Amino acid sequence: MKMKIPENFNLGAASSAWQTEGWSGKKDGQDSYLDDWFKNEYFVWHDGKGPDVATDFMNRYQEDIDLMKKIGLNSYRTSVNWSRFFTDYDNLTVDEEYAKHIDDVINALIKANVRPMIAIEHYDVPQYLQNKYGGWNSRKVVDLYVKYAKILFERYGDRVKDWFTFNEPIVPQTRIYLDAVRYPHIVDPQQWMQWNYHKVLATAKTVAIYHQMNQGGKIGVIHNWEFAYPRSKTYDPDVLAAHRFDLLNNRIFVDPLVKGSYSQELITLLKENNIMFRYHSEDQQLIKNNTIDYIGLNLYKPARVKQREYEWNNNSPFSIKKYYSDFDLPGRKYNASRGWEIYPPMMYDLAMIMKTDYHNFPWFISENGMGIENEQKYKNSDGIIQDDYRINYIRENLYWLIKAVNDGANCQGYMLWAFTDNVSPMNAFKNRYGLVEIDLENNLKRRMKKSGYWYADLISKRTLPDDSAYSYKSTFEENKQ
Image (tube, rainbow, N blue to C red; front, side):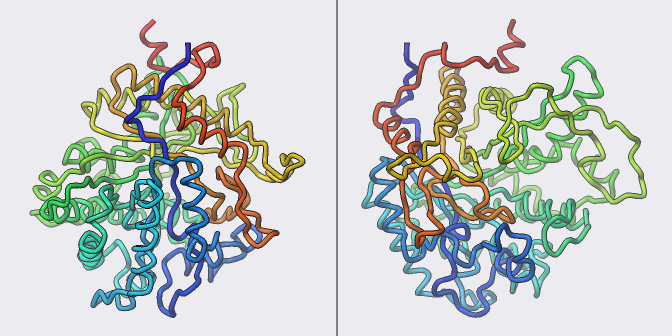
C-alpha cells in the first residue's frame, strides 16, 4: 500500500540570494561578508567560482520560476541580500533598483502559484558593518538589522507571509571564530558566543515588530540541526558526549527562540569556559515574550560521537570538540562526493524530539538534499542527468518524515536543497544539489534533471512507495521494542 502525503504538507525547494544572484547591478560598497571573503580568498573556492556570477538569478529569475511552475513547487524559500538592499547602511537608504528586483521576484513567484518564503539574512551581513562595528559582535548591528527587517515587512509583507530572521545563524561564526576555516580565520570563542546571542536577540526584537504590524503571516528562523547519535546508547559517557554536542550546536539557538530562555545547563557551560555572552537586564524578558511562530530545520547527515578519547588541553581555546570525539559507524551508507553519511531515519528521530522536547511546536524541513560531483557523466542521450541517486535519497527521507507525521509529529513540509545547482561556500559548484542543472560550459543553460520530473510527479500524485521499499529502522522505533 502506498503512503499518502497529506494535501496540506508543503513540498518545495530552497536556495538563497547570494548563492544564485550574481553581482550584476551591484554597486561599489555593497559587499557582503561572503563577497569580501571571495575577493580575498577566491583561490579556496572550487575552480575560483563564487558569488560573482553564481547562477545569474538576478537576470534569469523568470526562467527559474517558469521551471518551478512546471514542476509544481508549493513554495520557494530564498533570501534578500542585506548588503545589496541599501546604499547607506547607517541611514538605511534603500537601493531602489535592488528593491524592485525583490518586488519582481515575489510577484513572479505568486503569479506562478509558488509561495515565497523569505529569509532576512543568509550569511550576508554587509562588510561595511563588519568593518565599522565588528558585525554581530555589536548591538548597533542588532538595531540596524531590526530596522532593515521592518522595512522589508513594510514593502513586501502584503504578499510575503513566511519570514525567517536567519538561515543557519550559528554557521558563520562557528566557521570563523571556532574552526577558523573561513576568512579571516580568527580564533575567538567569546566572539563566537556573542554573535550567537546577538542573533537570538535580533530575532526576538524582529518578532516583536512583526507581530505588532499584524500582517497575517508567520515569522521564524531556519536552524541547521546537527543530529548527534552516541556510539553506544548504554554507555553513559557516550550519551553525555551526544547530549553536550546537541546542547552547543542546537539548543543554543532553538531553546531561547522556541521556549523563550536558555537552559541553565548551557549557561553553566558557558561560564565554566569563560565565554558567557554580554547582555542587558531587559533582554531576558524580551526574548521570553517574543518567541518565533515556527521553525525550519535543515537536516542532511547525522553526527556519530563518543566519549572524548584524549584529555582536553585546558590551555587550548574553547571548542565544542572539548566534549566529544567523532565516531565512524562501520558499514555506514554515505555520499562519496560529500563524505556525509546517509541515514534517512534521522528524519523520524528529529520529529520525535520536536514532538516530545518542544511540545509539538510547528516546524518543517527547510533543507535536505544530496550534492554529487561530476553529474554530467550521468547524462543520457538526450542530455538529461539521470540522478536516480537523488530520487532515492529524497524518497527515503520523505518516507521517514511522513511516517513521523502519521505518528503525530507537527511537521508541515519538506523543502529540497536546492532548486537549481548553486554556489556553496568554498565548494562552489563542485557538488551539485539541484533538481535543475546549471550548465557552466553552456551559458548557464537551465535543464531539468530526471529528479525534477520525478519531483513534479510526486507533487502531483502525493504518494510514496509502501514500507517494503525501505530497509532502515529509526532509533525511536528500536526503543519501542
